Length: 496
Ligand SMILES: C[S@@+](CC[C@H](N)C(=O)[O-])C[C@H]1O[C@@H](n2cnc3c(N)ncnc32)[C@H](O)[C@@H]1O
Image 1 (spheres, rainbow, N blue to C red):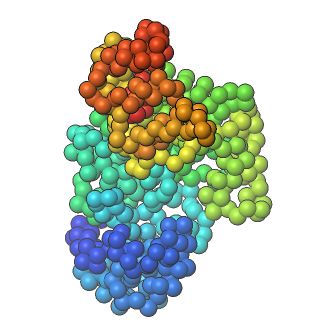
Image 2 (image 1 turned 60 degrees about the horizontal axis):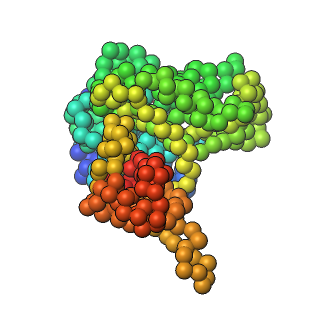
């Protein structure tokens, strides 16, 4: 399935997929909620039971391209009348096993709230029933959707998808970017990406190259990257996987991107990426990430979403390659991971999301490092967009500007008052954000009063003067005490 695939055959496949209504909604309908749910956990059996013997074109396509089952030529011809089973072989997407066609790729519908697409990648373990190959080209995984959910969808002229793989992020970019450059070190990945693009009527600038080498001297308004961030021991004989490991030591790849991507952003441009970082014994997670942020020369906002100890991190990634717990190969790799972390005195590994923003002026860049583990808004992109706008405003305005502004409490913010039974005054007042990072904090009576009058009419300065009079406090002291609180609310989106 090279990039030079016959356009007439690709067009026939595209028309057949559309005619078969091979969409996310139809797939859910054909499989039903149980089999569909099982498939999302990489369990193919319930879907096999439901689709076996079905003549529905969408069900035949699921068997062929998602479950990896051998399918009789007659059925394939029925589901793909323009391309035909022979055409699938000529496109390099399958081979014959006797009278049955066996797909050699995974092709499945995928979409967001408003779009439906087709994505082509290598088949996963569930379809091949074998461990992944080192040059495996990943389909849509949890990390792919996490990045897609976090990406701000501002309309841009030029966007970059670094480490594009099957092209899933580029598809999302196609909804709001006029021009898309997609890079990968893997030629196989670029072949898949080209087919994904063609099937969806897209024309992307595909480039082969390692990390930032493929875009030297170029700038973009938006960069997205789900990079090969997995920290991997460099021990001879251990399998490495192109899709998750770029070959550096420790977290060097993520450091390289966090510190290097800023130079590829247009003023006002944004980069959104996923990353893992090492946390040394006795250090806060922020120590290392803060060093990267300082070296980046741009605004940096990092949200750490999870922390794993070295053993659980090792288990995750040894299993991800398809190695069974307890096997000698599993134990050898597990030990190598533990030794690698021990050699650098790594106590834990942080997993999170990084947003970079290039300031449009020569102001000091801001650095925001947050640890947020619980549930958050889905999608997060709109909140990232608003959070960046608010933080840029704060970086460019002083306290007098904050006080001269009439702030409005965001519509998703609620305030809880907790009382001891029989007492008139609340024991605890808590502000709670419904969306975004679902920020909650305990506040005092004066802060609660400030929030209650944040209706877009009264400036913060006037509100604080009135509240000070009401509480019989010194207005200057109260303002000094609540200004940092107000600034943090602006940043978090509690007030807008
Ligand atoms: C985790 S996958 C992400 C794929 C896809 N963008 C997604 O979001 O699912 C990482 C991708 O980076 C590519 N990659 C690995 N090493 C690379 C390097 N040194 N330079 C550029 N891309 C690389 C892999 O081939 C793979 O396609």
